[in-house]
Amino acid sequence: MTTRPIFIPRPGERRPSLSGQPRMKTDWKRELRIWWREVDRWLLFFVALLMLVGTLAVAAASPASANRLSTAETQLPDLYFFWAHIRMQVLGLCVLIGTSLMPLKLLRRGAIALGCAMLFAMVLVPFVGTEINGARRWLNVGMSLQPSEFLKPAFAIMLAWILSWKLRDDKLPVIGVSGALVGLIVVLLMAQPNLGGAILFVGTWFVMVMLAGLPLQRIGMLTAAGVAGMIAAYLFYDNARHRIDAFLGGPTAFDHVDLASRTLNSGGWTGSGFWLGDNKMRLPEAHTDYIFSVIGEEFGLIVCGIVVLLYLAIVLRVLIRMVEEDRLFIILAASGLTAMFGGQAFINILVNLQLFPSKGMTLPLISYGGSSTLAICFTVGLLLAVTRRNPYLAREPFDWKGSIEKEGDT
Image 1 (cartoon, helix red, strand yellow):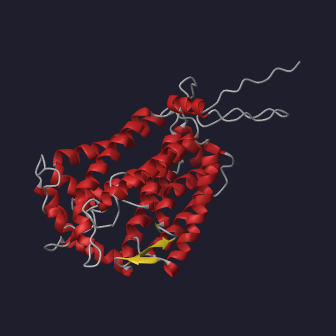
Image 2 (cartoon, rainbow, N blue to C red):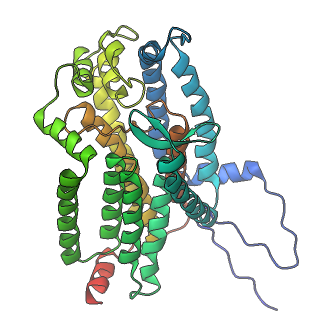
Image 3 (cartoon, rainbow, N blue to C red):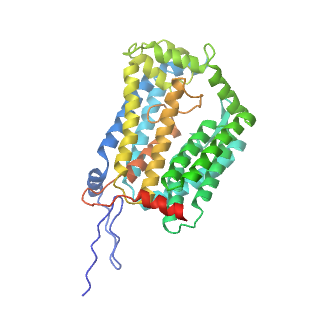
């Protein structure tokens, strides 16, 4: 008589079906109970707070953008973008929760397939894409779709998968393969042009290859290559040169950056009050790129500080969650998703504070967005999925030092 091995599930794993026995129908109530037990509730709480702040911020910014985009033929109501944002948030929440419920193996395969599809779509963008404000980044597929937004979470999962190959065979050229992938993405982004997106992808790749155990010598070489790349972009890429020159020369009166700064500072510490801001009415992209400045004007610098602390809390919570993780793929995936999410948030905030060149990036979970809202919610759903933990399953921490020493010896 053979004894059946004991199956101890990890987060996102389910007991395999026994041969000869039909699979039972999924009990969704049971699945939700398991999800609630395993999900990081603090992380979910911080995300919910940011989405609530985003709802109020878009409501505050909607009149400014609606008034600016209205024409003699079409007059947009003051809350046009607010109601559109609510609809996308509801759909985004479904994507977020649904993604966090899925098994890790299915998520990995789905993210890789999505990444390949978005890479193909980015090849099409320069030829059949829609041009807005001098940039060609969108495809019209019944709705405005920006492939690079959906590529961001897929890229983190793809890169984690490639870099985790090193555990199977140290001789596999994982750095070279991952470098070729990020190089292709950078070329496609620069053709749009989208310098900010290229910087974000390269930064995420750099963080993940360091966590994968890249020797210090190679880290120095990559840093030098990154500096050389920025110099080359300044010398030969007009979009980068214009943005850097504008940043170093300081804003001119009433340009986008200057208007954003005036709006941000006009509210003082406590703000002018909901719907009482005046400077936002002159601010372009008040509901997207410069919504942080609208928060400063109407709700005050104290609320701006709380928003920054919420983003920091998400980043730190994921890092704390990874301390006792023993799987390299999960560590890399969580770190990449966090770097992509947090990097975009802090670039947007620094642009509003005049501490970074203007990049045209939205503020995750707060800015109004169509497909970009769905992409951000998909990112957060992946983050919740990879940080799920079985509270009854102990694990040994990943051997960071041993991995680095082993990589250095090869």
